Image (tube, helix red, strand yellow):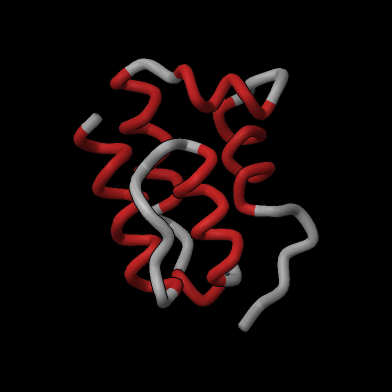
Length: 82
């Protein structure tokens, strides 16, 4: 597993060019779709289960999951459907 210094949410905020992390919660449908496409470029193992679940919880994308793979899939699905 690769350890990234920044967290998954920080990477997302940087990619989306938002000034504050909280702005990720208010992305348009198009913005959420772009964020999902960006996050899809990461393998689930590149971040910890905690980081995937943290993103799920922070972005109100569902409930915490038991594996990073399932958490990643849930996050991507939620970003694309809400």
